[in-house]
Image (cartoon, rainbow, N blue to C red):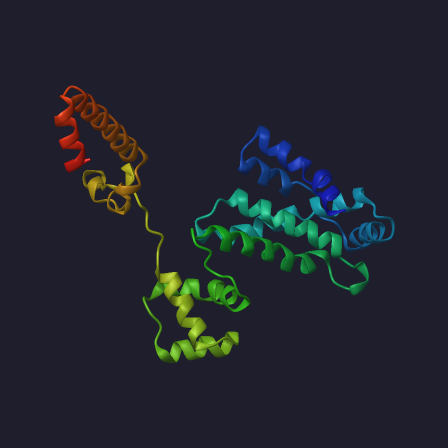
Length: 252
């Protein structure tokens, strides 16, 4: 069902973005009317009881503006807003599929968790080359410590204790995440826009390369050995029989 919802619910998004910018897409979703509580209940009931994909489509479309709003709150992670919106839309569709109109809350309140969860997964996968958080404790720490870590280099022992107690994690987990947040990806090459092109020869790629494993060097060495062996055999063949025997016994 979720696959069908993706095909039916987000066709409009790809069509809109294919003919315009992200700005035009955001403007477009903001024009989609919001549902009243009764309309939302009716559509959710149709979806739950009859697997009505048109009802699912309307529920998704009417909540796309909220995905954009949530995505903007993660703008400080250096990732594309369009990518965050796309991940959030997936979370919204998952929420629509699981929404029960009988629980007594609006869909937007129920969907926030699913939308943020997909965005969090995307941020963790793409914020650094090496995945920065793999456990539940690390995920909590990543999103709670990052802002504080930008304001100071290291936390005091008292601050670590407060954070650990508030998030129900160990002091070790806090220190480990603190170290990860203060580390940065190291480029193996200096880019032309980094202002370091004059020192390109000092880039790590130049001294990390294993010259002994170079295919070019291995091929050149093999060709040289073959050429020398051929020349040696030709020179020996030109000698008299006695000289050939002496050379073969002494050196070959």
